[in-house]
Length: 265
Ligand code: T3D
Image (tube, rainbow, N blue to C red):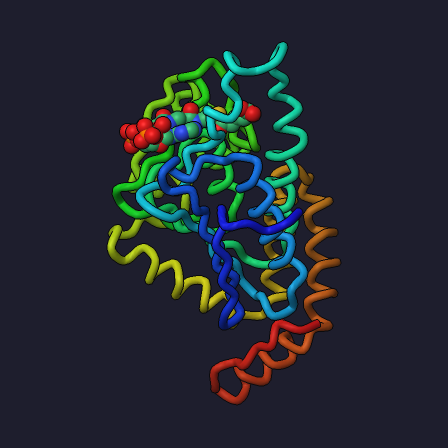
């Protein structure tokens, strides 16, 4: 998938900063933005110099979900097949985000609606500006929450709140989202990017392999039995124990100095 300017990409100091960039459409997803985001994430996944990813939106919104002008049923030839769009664009995006063995920080700088909220919730650490809102907008247009929304909402906030959000489409403010455990923290709008940058920087300086394996273990926990999870933790710990960062972490502790992690295998 070729990159284009619907997603701005900046790689520096171990962090890939990705900015959704269709501000006049509140960063709603069209095909070009899907292609660009997928390509940028895929590149960050495999680039050894990238040790953390920071995703945000340009302008006053994070992302308003699907660009409704692009899929207007009145303009379509024949019957719309939304399942096709989900299968071809949204599901691969969510699977890609979850498959990246590196921490992904999402800075929700404004409204996150529809699949825009789903993308934010697929990330690992979600910070939101206090004025940001999460909206399960799907019910307003007769659709079903997608891109992992029903899965993430139910696991993060439980069935009662998931149904409340999805069946009413009522906006959820950032503070309440944090209180409910939907996101990591709400921060003052003017400090959002600084806080998200600091968080990404500390993760980028961390033991990348161990952090990636930790992400993998936590993601597996919701579907694994305890026995399966214990086995998985054993295997991942074995892998983490072979990294130079483990040796460095123990040496730094013993020598009472800050660890100098390289993130290498
Ligand atoms: O393939 C498939 O379709 C299946 C996949 C579906 C996944 C989905 O995400 S479905 C859900 C799609 N999203 C929505 O339904 C949200 C629609 N947007 C809104 O409800 C509101 O815009 C917001 C609550 C997000 C923000 O409201 P507000 O008052 O702050 O802004 P606004 O005035 O509504 O929007 C500003 C501009 O952005 C406006 O354009 P204009 O009039 O200035 O030229 C508006 O049309 C545009 N915009 C906002 N959201 C979308 C959008 N344009 C296209 N698609 C959007 N989703």
